[in-house]
Image 1 (spheres, rainbow, N blue to C red):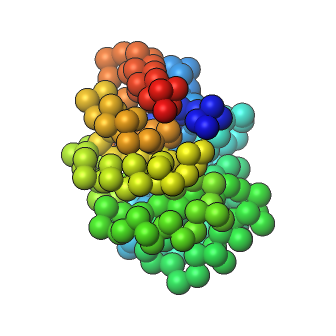
Image 2: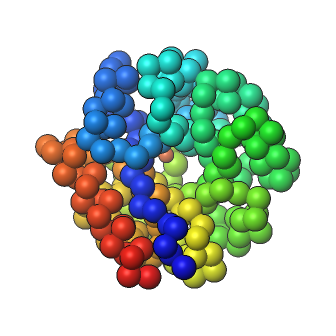
Length: 225
Ligand SMILES: O=C(CO)[C@H](O)[C@H](O)COP(=O)(O)O
Ligand SMILES: [Fe+2]
């Protein structure tokens, strides 16, 4: 069943030197990253600001053939669908918590040629996202409170990952927050296959080895399942 599921590592550039966004991103890709996870914050849904579609578009102009996921930590995800599609985003992952009509947002994302990711915060029950699985391409289970990089991994969120993996053997399940070599095993065993890692990868002495360790651990768990 798990034969088509693939381990993928998408580093978060949140805690990198953002004045060198292109260089930092290219370095991660040269070191084996499968995709880039771009954290977009609006200072409202979360108490922090990062980058928006103009920056994503500039990055896309320099990096052509790489899968860009934007993690939209914003109060009005519907507002940024068209600009992000225009910026060359491949997957638009948004939090369902502030959204009244999740189906409608999913429909607009697809209409604009992007894949749909649905994200939930640590306090949101998995049942809230379970009802939308059929219209999504991926579910993101946050393993920290969204807003800042470098926080401590919340292991209790693994029950959500395990629940989803048991129900949906081929669903892309992503984890994000505090994930690195010391926390990857429980993510892999619970069933996550798309791994966001910020601080642990950016700050690693050997980025390529760290990315390889994360991917190998996840792929081994997939192969065993
Ligand atoms: O969405 C995020 C924070 O809201 C980031 O993607 C996440 O925190 C990654 O950074 P780290 O691995 O350092 O926790
Ligand atoms: Fe993120």
